[in-house]
Length: 78
Image (cartoon, rainbow, N blue to C red; front, side):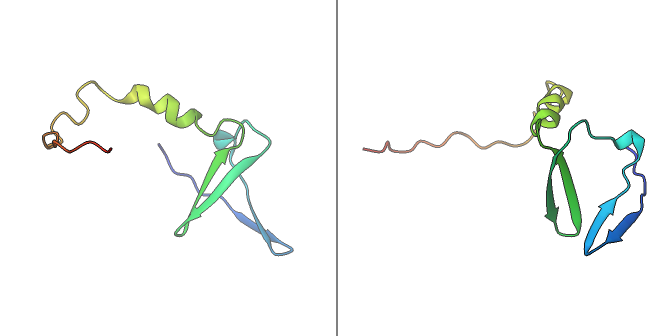
């Protein structure tokens, strides 16, 4: 995934981003979340689409050697 730079426009106390054509979002509304100094922009009508599409990218041996501990025996709740 390549990074690009874009301009931040300021007007009346708001900031806007000029989104390049390659980054166009196919929606008329987005969720926006600030985490630290980063912004996440997620399409409003399909917020889970990227996650669902990325699941197929995992290989069958993903995390085979993660060192998972043995299952613990615990008493049941009453």
